[in-house]
Length: 116
Image (cartoon, rainbow, N blue to C red; front, side, top):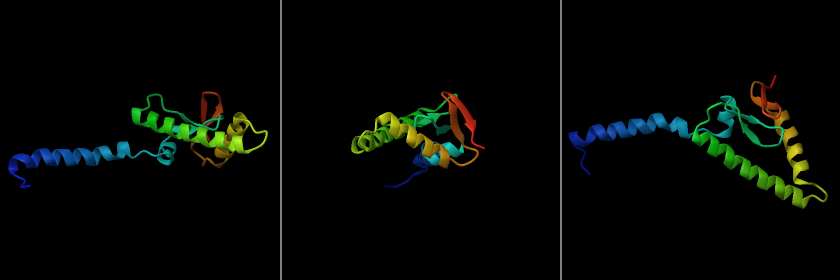
């Protein structure tokens, strides 16, 4: 394909837009926690801390929570006498304990604090 002056500018604009848009799509759980967008909930799931989450952030949180729930359910079914709720609570304790200082954790339902 031959790039002419007529196609050069639109291609440049396209590639520059990808360059600047890439960080918006590259949010992962660790960076979202570090940015204060999400935190660990008392239920063992990830919660959104920010007031106006992007659709991408919401989709990421939903996907992570679906995977966590499946994992918790699998553990509960393999552990005699363990309920899903018990596994969720234990996971929450461990996840909140290992959350670094300065990131958000849920103190009470819907109440977020920065971990000291």
